[in-house]
Amino acid sequence: MDTNEIFVTGYAKLPQGITATELYTVIAVGMLVDANTGVIIDIDCSLVTSVARNFVKKLMCSRNLNDLDTIEAIFNDKYHGSARKALISAFRTCNEKYLQYVKNKEEA
Image (cartoon, rainbow, N blue to C red):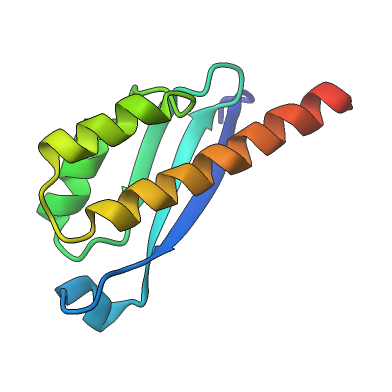
């Protein structure tokens, strides 16, 4: 394992009436992030279909978690599933956890 990698998670409530909500009440996003740069190394989420999970992975790997405006723009442009807002919210949570890690590391 690369010593610069950290794992962060984000969760968000899913909208009613979609398949994922029948299985889960929230969407979970987990990602490996380069602790020094914020670059997303690997990612997975609890979307129901492998196509959707792989699409999110394809969209987000190599993106920088610090650039939430770009991440949100990509989701708004490319992802037209019902869980879009929940995914964006989960990414915000991941970003907050990453920033907290960076702050704690600087203070140590």
